[in-house]
Image 1: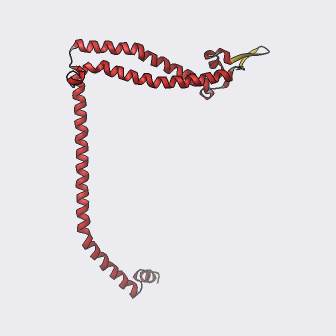
Image 2 (image 1 turned 30 degrees about the horizontal axis):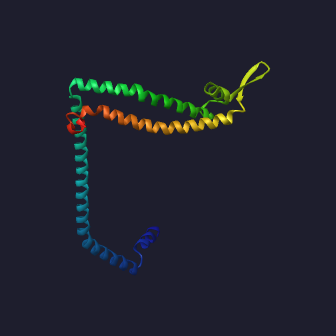
Image 3 (image 1 turned 90 degrees about the vertical axis):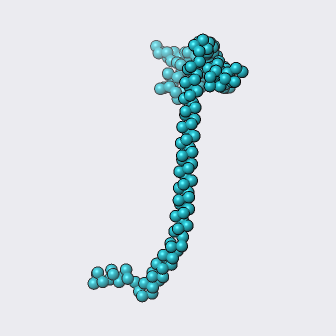
Length: 201
């Protein structure tokens, strides 16, 4: 009886079976009508996708080939030009480049002075702050032990640190842009073969 009941549930009534038959006929008609159009559309979209993928691959390859050709052409300029460029780049690195490095170190120092969370504990922070800004710290002696505390001048010093940091960060943006432009100008002669008009400017 269990098997009979299961099969009856699947078979349904005569009306259920007629409805299923009608649905099957309708679905088959829709499929027969729409499938060719959809198949053609899918084929069209697939073709477009493959074309776009091929164009992207070719564009990337062309750009990579050009970049590599320029790199090799820059290495083929006469030795005296390369020597001159190296000298100019070295001079920029020893002046503006060094100034940028020093400014970056100072920015990091100021940021550390404003951020105790960078240190393992308060004592380490206060010791570091004392090395950078001696007046920001006062010695506190209790018994035979020496510790450090923020001085009454700390709020004023902190305000000055914030101001210096903002000015220095702003100046660094300009310095880095100036450095990039200077390096580009110094290396322009290396474009003698790859971009002769530009190298003469």
